[in-house]
Length: 247
Image 1 (cartoon, helix red, strand yellow):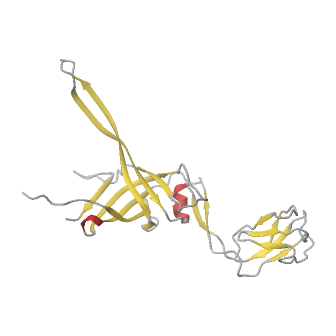
Image 2: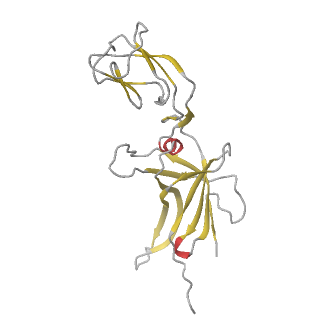
Image 3: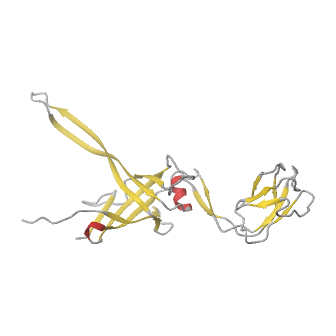
């Protein structure tokens, strides 16, 4: 009797959606790793009649976790890693935003929002005198930098600019968000044979490490707790996950 080759090399896209379905099912992006781990609560009754071994064993799954390694540094992915919230920054022009200064050469003065450097930026000193780029300050991606011998002192400045379109992540302000996770997968070892994984209810844990300076492509290691979904009931149905495998 011949055997059927069922070798497996998995690929595909991971999507998440709030458990309450208050937002659509959206992709996380490029994910290089996705795996599950199962913790076991095991009780053993030793065989005391002689000969060693166990008389009986009871094994229960006490916890399920999943690990993902994401490579797209989007605001939504970073918010998952930091248990944060995401809000869209205003792009309305800002007028006379007050900034404290020391008037020291090389001092960086970041604006309240990321400035659009293609739009007009006006910098005024405490007497409302308009300062000159190149003489008093240098434009930076986050704001301005003080030039030695210029007109910026320790009395503060006022800046007017147009913010870039951006998202703001507020870290560690969300602790109880629950999601549904869905993988649309394919088996590269079987000519792209499809499979799906539905994980009904999950929570993301804060990352242990999240690097922002590196010589290599950065990654976001995400750990997920897989929780029982009591809304799913029925004979033979899992409250944790379902796998659909073609073929």
